[in-house]
Image (cartoon, rainbow over all chains, first blue to last red):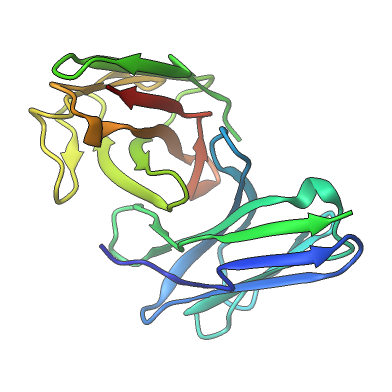
Length: 112
Length: 116
């Protein structure tokens, strides 16, 4: 099935550093969602974006819905050890009957 | 948001048997979905659970193998039938189309299934 291009695939950073990851698509999306998944848990919604150009923050996390509606990024500022996990982007495009299309995930490791 | 629970959280099953996974949402929701996730991979949609009608399956998934029930707006079950080791995976349910967030989905904690 269709998947989003998510990068980077993995990151290993020092505590306190900022992190940026992004997702791109060849088609237009109406909604972009960012999730975090810890081992043994289900994905937890971090940020939801519904309009082109929208910039939304959730604590140290900031995400933007690209103006072309074909991309989105997630930034994490001042990373801490509990930021470790896998981050997934997901989107809904027009006419997809509310089914999510997923990126392959970005695995984040933080060195204390 | 919605709080979603799943039972069982994990199970180890014998080849050829079936397992039914339950998903309970703390509020009425329009959409419920079932996913499969292999270790280290992204989520794959199995089907959309429709209240009062047959589930809508994605390509590669069939009702005989993954029968789904959705008797009301807060509950759904997924059965993994005639299991084989290839069915070992994490199974996740999600709820979507909550008021004010039509496309957002919230996930349960998952059921980790191992088939011997």
